[in-house]
Length: 302
Image 1 (tube, one colour):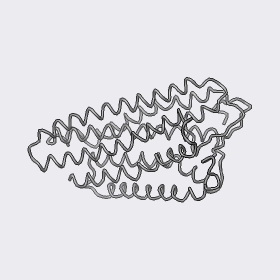
Image 2: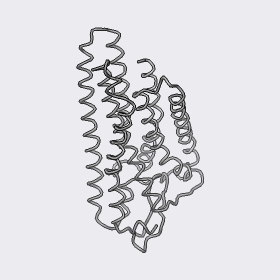
Image 3: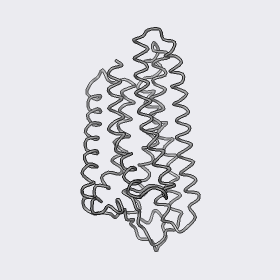
């Protein structure tokens, strides 16, 4: 891929090793991974189908749920097909352009997921704080605009990652001990100084997660203050149930994500196969739990 300006001595492909140390068990490992992936896809596509089919569900909170579902589908699909090809057919090669593209979409969709969670927190605040004006303040068009803003933010934040990698001189060894192209793992193959890459990855993780969590905490802090003032026990309970569901989803999203980022940066004390399996499960588990949990809570909140 000449467009990526790697040194002439570098081959045009990288090699993804899968799970080093467990090569003989790759086929067995592929069974639960593929089941998680397929079940997650079916469940998420079912949610999209039901919302698209049912006119009464064309509301902001269900539009946000669909956006969350799409990010979950995008996250798992960006890594699992290639991982399964490695496990089942030992197809470990990936072209440089494909590796950088996978990395861009993987990190981009993950940050977009965070942006949608912020919008969902704001949506619940408006719904509880000013329910009479909720439909006029947050229309489907407004939600779509907020989603577009989040998308633009994510592209601007993630685009420097592959661009920085194209400036690095890479050594003869093009082996990535993982199932997918993660930013810092690709950077570690360089013979040059990767301090900038490390710092950008860490700053991005802490700034995005830190800023997003602060905004979400602010929204839910205001929500709790409003909820405590509600006199109706039934309304009080319904509001708390909805908020609890959202908070659980956010915990499931941010905690493993932060662990995955830190383990990529400082993986010396973690067994490689444990680190890789947990990293893959991080991208497989939320698509099962998050949308379905929110779907159930939204249905009970109606």
